[in-house]
Image (cartoon, rainbow, N blue to C red; front, side, top):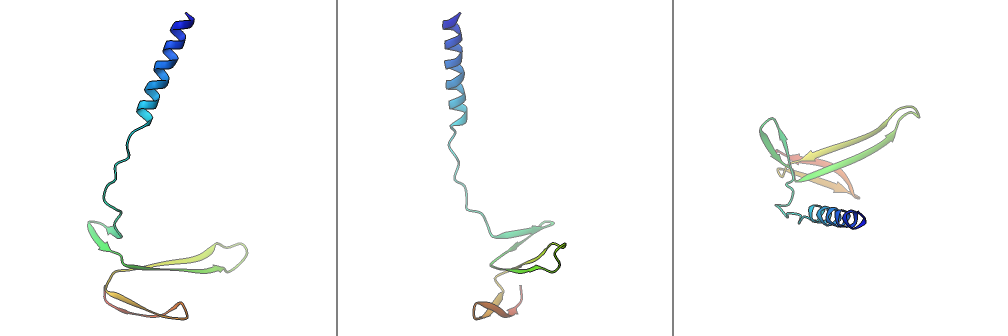
Length: 87
C-alpha cells in the first residue's frame, strides 16, 4: 500500500510539472491602437496630466489624452504649450 501511494504521488507530481511547463508563444508586439466599434485608430503620442485633488473628500483629477500621428505637440520647458494638426 505504501509503494502504491508513493508511485501515485510521483506520477501526479510529474504530470503537474509537464502541464505547468508550457512554452510561451512570442507573437507580434502589441500595437498602439484603439478600436471603437469596428474602426481602428493608430496612436502615436499621449499626455497624462495630474491635476491632483480639488477637495479632501473628492477623487483625483487625472486626464489622459491620446493623439494619432497627424498631431504635433509643441513643448516649452518640458510641458505641452500647444498642439496642431489633424488626426
